[in-house]
Amino acid sequence: MLRKPLLLLTLLPALAVGAAPSADPRFDALDARIAALEANAQVLRDQAAAAQAEAAAARAELQQMRAEQSQSKVAAVAAPAPAMSASNANGNAFNPAISMILTGQYAHHSLDPENYQRSGFPLVGEGGPGEQGLKLGESEISLSANIDDKFYGQMTLAFGSEDGETEVGIEEAYIDTLALPGGLSLRAGRFFSNIGYLNSHHAHTDAFVDRPLAYQDFVGNQSGADGAQLPWVAPPDLYVELGGELLRGDNYPSGGADNDGVGVQTAFAHLGGDVGIENSWLAGISVLRSDAVAAEDGFSGEQTLYLADATWKWAPRGNTKDGGVTLRGEYFFDDRDGVYVDAAVPELVQAWRGQRRGAYLEGVYRINRSWDTGYRYDRLWADQDGPQASDHDPVRNSLMLTWRNSEFSLLRLQYSRDEPNADDSDNAIYLQYQATLGAHGAHKF
Image (cartoon, rainbow, N blue to C red):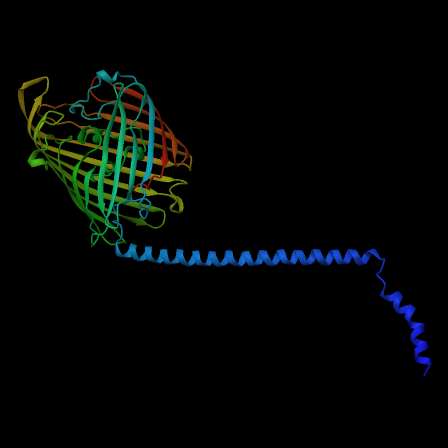
């Protein structure tokens, strides 16, 4: 019985020694490490919770975007934009897209522009050779947007300089319908007529500094007026566009807004398509009929202008930005039946019955994204009888070279040799700059 108490008494010192705190510093370091790991674990748990919350918010936003996209697709099917409204850039946005086109040039003519005369064709509108030296070209500011689900609107203000005076005018201001059935659309306001090819295009899209002679003499560089346009575009496969216009008729080649303010009527047809993936084409015929009263060239009477146009484009793999060739030509036939009054001698009235013609052919070679070059041949055929009769048919040859830093800026050098009459010739050199600022829609074919 006494052995157990004695054994306990012998073990007490050893137990007391084992219970004492250790003096080894490794235990303290381990405790500190455990505490740090626990703190880091808490931070990770907090970060994970924040990430889960952010992911949940992102999932909710994605679902909302998909819902809105689905609704916009339904709306687009219910009210498709008309095919002719290529200007409807960013058509789903209701805030106006604003763009500016800045243009300027230097011009040198061997023939003084003040002495320039074109046989058989009085100079009208912007049909002359322009001024010598440095000059601000026609610059423009354009605003466009969907008005609502039924209408699209655009306004373009043009700024120019003539004889040192700044000129500002409304170039275009119109609305387009977006929801007419069966490929129909309606345009109303002020706009460029859809006759021919170049006429409906803004000048800054041209490949050359100036418009062809036929445009200068038959439509005063570009035919635009107040009125209404009704085109119809066939379903896809082959591009087919048919339409007509009723125009006020204040501007050349008409004048006086005759016929109760509907002095001009037009009709047009355009066909186009692709040949493989590297070739595309567009062709058209148009007619413009006007009742002129004291037009800018002195004509009063009935005029009918017929136009035919054709364009062929080739580009490797169909990419026109990297290279390719564009061939284009237009033919004009002008038939008049009326009288001519010379502004210098108003009491002298002469009958003006006859036909005049004009045409141009141009080719542009897109070398790469930065460079393109081209040649254009212009010719006019004067009337053989009447007040503007002439044995000389004006001819002009033009060469151009264009450098593009990007799709928004270019520098263009052009040389032209013009033979406007039997006695004179004009050798002209142009250096043009052009810059695009803001949201500018895609151009037509």
